[in-house]
Image (cartoon, rainbow, N blue to C red):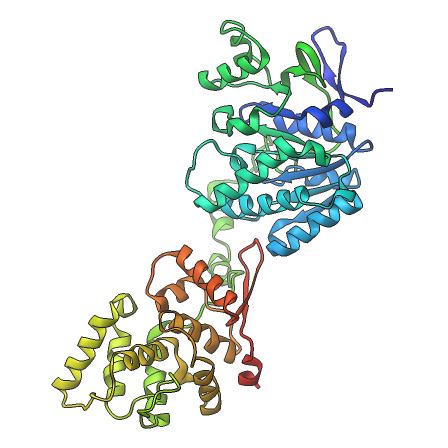
Length: 482
């Protein structure tokens, strides 16, 4: 007996059936412009097969979370978990055969892509004993398997293409049956689309998409005009799990509804312009003054330099010539004032160290300040301490931080010290903008690589969820805080 479900009726009011077992072996591609009814079709397919097979839905817009209101689906909010937690969840989903919806709407596009890619890869890499059959539905698949590079980072593109290719090309032997839905066939990677043997094509207007859809359905150019005239909720189906010949199907009704649906007209409020203006401006200033749900930013560099200069003058020790230890004591005298001025200038951290050192030496000569004991390596470390705000710490904390920084490379010393100082003061980890300013770069990618380097060398431990909330801990900093 076949495991068949009804997705709708054809023009003769005859039920159009989908063989779920055949679908697991041959995969499905759904295409249609926005408003053509793709999400409705996927929802119908999921609802009808919910009691037959495990289902995993990659949902970038939060359209399918309402399945949990009517079926046993578990909603996983991608923004609430770190990458390692997402991977662990994927393994447990395969182990326990749970039907889930991975909701990604709270993430930015590139974070959505990375989260989905790691999730799909973990599903694919599950142990052999957990290779149970499952439908894996990926809505807006052109995001996760783009035909062109677009604006996403190259490593993100490689990661997501690998995950989607594994799902569609090699997933069958692992029990994973990919169902991908896209608005534009031309934007979907060809090696992903080509692995589907079943097709449901909805309304589309662009010639390139119509031609590709017609080619997949075995239609000539004249017959392809039918695709442009399809009504909302009407699709042309073909494939071993649907029909051996192209069939027109009107998708049936569903129980659950999309939470993001707002297509129906509703009456406008009966409020005049004056009352509406008052309503819009009521308590506006108070609402705008409410804090945003983001980690508190690190303090701006200028106040930090002011405090630093004072503390440097209070706690300085003479320089020690012997050099087993790379730690550089803070300078004495009016050198503090020169460093304070330089660090307070806009773009100081973006200036080459050699230029800064020449400026430092010139200003010391102009003011008759002895600076011969401060060579180039010493200056670079002193400037890193100044930029990070080490001078704000009490003497005991400062001594401990200087000891922790002894073996840290000069090129990463300033951002590392900024992280240590924030942890010692009990503040939130510095954000990427703060670290970039201290590091002297405008590249967010370089800061991410910097954090990866510091973590690999054991200097910090980074925990970041897909919502962008990052927590950085520093081994040994408990002694500083205490």
